[in-house]
Length: 407
Ligand SMILES: Cc1cc2nc3c(=O)[nH]c(=O)nc-3n(C[C@H](O)[C@H](O)[C@H](O)COP(=O)(O)O)c2cc1C
Image (cartoon, rainbow, N blue to C red):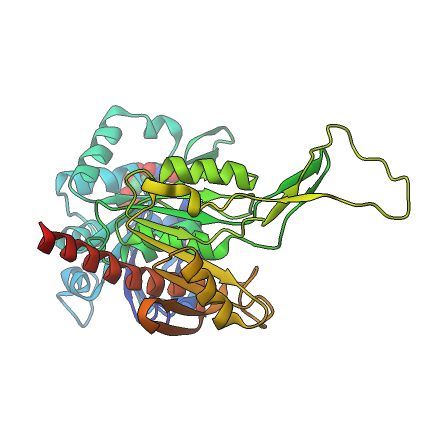
């Protein structure tokens, strides 16, 4: 079942041009199975109407705490119902109120009564965003544990390109999903994830690669950040947004991936090798485009280095590999597990319909030492990633407690 399913989300909307984006954000939450109550400031109602959110399927919309209603404690009781409060867009004004304990309308009042995770997606004109008091308020809220996403640099309502644009709803959704995980599970831990394909050049215009979309690796990085880890994502060329709170390191070839993994793995706790690293690369790189001359041609390939084997002392405490096989999946996965001395391996089959390569879903089997195995039925890659990480946290904790006993 999806992590977002059945979650209670309070969606705050304040009065900025980006208010229309809150409609899309609501839709994403609802699609994921969450229950959403919307709280609007009076200014927000000038940009979008409460009816917009009601029609889209919000459980309830609050915007006037003095209106006649059944529940006279509604101005604070929703704060008990919500598991997270997301204010998107967050105006300079609402940020200022939250930083100074002002509760003078429905949203700021609920926010002050709310003691769970708060996520703010600021959106404002660049001059407002650069205002020293606004910056001071953001810094202060940051220092007391309020979470922020954005603002991004992009085209603002004033048509200039500058910082101040609200992060896209998809990104705000992903950050919310991260914040619903237990952040203390991997706090202070360094996690390395590899993702995507590698691209091995033949000549300036041609290459060898594979169909890896990178989605499984990105989901792992996304979930690991949600569990509170410092995540470095080493990625081959893909068309995906970098998950919030994740540091990206872009590479192309297997050799580039190898040197990035070597460098990043120093002091790392967990490594997820989800990238589809090309087994072979062309032996020679032709500096000029190879001309078509004959009916056939031969390409000489040589094996790429084995990244895990070359890690030596920099190998993280727990290393998880991935096996993509089209036949004898279990046997081959277990062979790879042993050969590479992995802690466990995640096996999947790219030919299965509706899961795997390119899909947002996956169905995998985990194999580990001493006959450990766990089948994870078809689910969104993010939810699969959460389960994989939970299993690796168990291993990491076991290692930690063993070490403590030895000391
Ligand atoms: C057309 C228009 C667009 C605005 N856009 C923004 C905005 O994007 N961000 C912002 O902080 N304020 C913006 N404002 C100013 C806020 O609406 C104003 O500060 C208001 O008091 C905010 O109230 P609230 O925080 O209670 O929603 C805009 C005002 C107008 C008239």
